[in-house]
Amino acid sequence: MRRMRYLGWISVSIQIVLFSIIILHMKLWESFLGFIFGREEDIIYPRAPLSILVGEHLFLVIVSTLLALIAGTLLGIYVTRPRGRDFLTIVNDVTAIGQTFPPVAVLALAVPIVGFGAKPTILALFLYSILPILRNTVTGLENIPPDIRESAIGMGFTGLQRLLRVELPIALPVIMAGIRISFVINIGTATIGAVVGAGGLGTPIISGLVRNNPSFVLEGALVSAFLAIIADQFLAQIERAMRAPYERALSS
Amino acid sequence: MNKNRMIVLENVTKSYGEKAALQGISFDVENGELCVLIGPSGCGKSTTLKLINRMLEPDGGEILIEGRSVRDFKPELLRRKIGYVIQSIGLFPHMKVSQNIAVVPSLLKWERKRIGERVDYLLELVGLDPAIYRDKYPNELSGGEAQRIGVARALASDPPLLLMDEPFGAVDPLNREILQVEFLKIQRKLKKTVILVTHDLDEAIKLADKIVIMDMGRIVQIGQPENILSKPANSFVRNFVGTDRAIKRLSRFQVADYMNRASSTTIRRLKESNYKEAASRRESRFLWITDEMGILTGWIDFKNFKESDRLEEGITHVDPSNFAVRAEFTLKESLSRMLSQGVRSLPVTDEKNRLIGEINLSTIEKLTELEE
Ligand SMILES: Nc1ncnc2c1ncn2[C@@H]1O[C@H](COP(=O)(O)OP(=O)(O)OP(=O)(O)O)[C@@H](O)[C@H]1O
Ligand SMILES: [Mg+2]
Image (cartoon, each protein chain N blue to C red):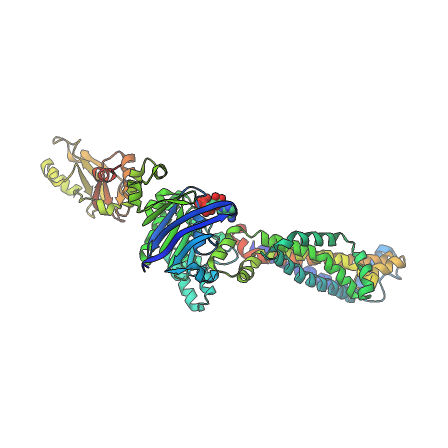
C-alpha cells in the first residue's frame, strides 16, 4: 500500500511535468492541431500563449475555491455546533438552490454590480463551489462516531479544543474530497469567465466560436480538460495521504 | 462530613423530557473503594456516571466530590480530574497510542518529557510493551489491547477518581477475565476510587468492594458482594443474582486462602518404600506424586488402592498445567474444574507447576452453605 501511494505521487509528478512541457512549447500544439485540421494558418490562438492562459485560469479557480473553502467550512462548522444547528436545513437548502442557478446567469447578474473581468467570474465560481465543500464538511463532522465525541467530552476537551484536535482532523479527508470536487468542477466552469473578460482557457474557446475556428476551441478545451484531470489526481493524492495514518493497518 | 467519602450522591433525580431516568438515588463511595453499579438495561447506570462528571446536569439533588459540589467546578476542568472509560473505548483514530494516552496530560499542559515518561509507565502498567505500542494507531490494536489503552488513557493524569462504563463489555469472555484480573491488580496497587458500571454479575462480584443494584431509576440494594449474595433485599435482587448465587459467591474467594497442605512423595521414594510407608505419608485420600524438582506428575488415590497392588500401577499420571489449579484462581474456577474432572480434590501448583498444596471440595461446600 505504501508503495502504491509512492507510485501515485510519481505518476502525478510525471503528468505535471508533461503538462508543463506541452503548454510551454507552442510548436507542439501548432503541429498537433495543424495535423488534425490539415492547415497551417490560424491554428493557435494568437493573442496569448497557453502558459498565460493556464495561469489566468488557475488564478480564477484557486481564488474562488479558497474563498469557498473558507466560507464553506466555517458555515459547515457553524451549523453543526449546538448554537447553529437550527440553521442546518436552511443553509443546506439555500446552497443547493445556489447550485441549480446557471453560472452564466450569475455572471449576467454580477457584472452590473462588480463590473467586468475576474471579479464576477470568481463570484460565480465561489457560489458554485460552496455547496460541495459545505456538504462534505457537514457530512464529515456529523459522521464522527458518537463514542469518539463522548470520550472527547469526557476527557475534558472544551468545545473549541474538541473541534480543532478531534473533529476536524477526523473529518479532514472528507472535507478534502469536497474541495477536490469543487476545484475540478471549477476548472471546467471557469471557461465561461472569458465571456466577461476574465481571461483563462475560455478565451481561445470563445474566440474560436466567434470566428468559427474549431482549432482555437479545441486548444482551450483540451488544455482545460488535462488541467482538470491532473488537478483531480493531485488532490486525490493529498486526500489519500490525509487518510493514510489511520487506514494504514487496514490496507497493509 | 466524613473525609473518607470521595463521592456522595444525595437524592439525585434526572429526567429526559418526560422520561424519568433517575428517581432520587443516594449512595456514597469511599476513598479507594471500587463501587460497581449494576442493573437491567435502561435502569440509569450510565446516566448516573455522566451526572458525576457533568456530562449531564441533574434535575434535583446534590453530587459531592471530596465534599464539594460538582457545580463548583467548570465542567471541563472537573472532567480532567476524573478518568473516564466507556465500553466502545472511543480511542481517537487519528492519534497514535501515545497521543491518545497523552490527551489529558497535554490538556493540563504537562511538560513533554513528563508526558513521555508517563505514557511509557502506563503502557507497562497495563501490560503492553511501550516500544511496540507507542506508535501504533488504534486500528492496529486488538479489542483487548484497545481496552487496555482506554484504561491507560483514563489513568493518564493520575486522577483520584475513575468512572468506567462497561469497560470490559466489548471483549470476548476469555479476554474479559484476563482484563478483570489485571485491572484488579492495578487497582490494588493504585487504590483509586472507582465507579464501574456492568451488566455482568460475575464481574461485579469479582471486582466490587461495594455493589449498588439499580432498577428503573432507583437503588434496590447496596452492599458488599457477600451480603448481596447471602441476603438479597427483595425478590428483584434474588431473581437478579439468580439461583446459583451460592456458586457466584465463590468467585470472591481465592484458592490461596483456602488450600490445605498437600502430602506428596517422589516416584523414587515411592519405589523404595512399601504400601504402609506410603499410606502413612498421606494426609487425605490422595498422595500426590512429584518429580525430584517438586513438579507434579500424578497421584495415588488410596480409596481404590489395595495393599496387594503394585505401587506404580496405582499412579494416575497427569499433565499438571491442565489438571492443577493455581493459588490465584478463584474457588469458583476450582469448583468447575473439580466438577469437570470428576474429582473431590485438586492439587495447587505455582507457575512452574510445582506442587504447593491442595484444595478440597469439602472446603468449598462449607463456603456455599448460606443462610437463606
Ligand atoms: N439522551 C437520552 N434521551 C432520552 N432518553 C434517554 C437518553 N439517555 C438515556 N435515556 C433513557 O434513560 C434511561 C436510563 O438510561 P441509561 O443510559 O442511564 O441506562 P443504563 O442503565 O446505562 O442502560 P444500559 O445498561 O443499556 O447501558 C433509559 O430508559 C434510556 O432510554
Ligand atoms: Mg449504559
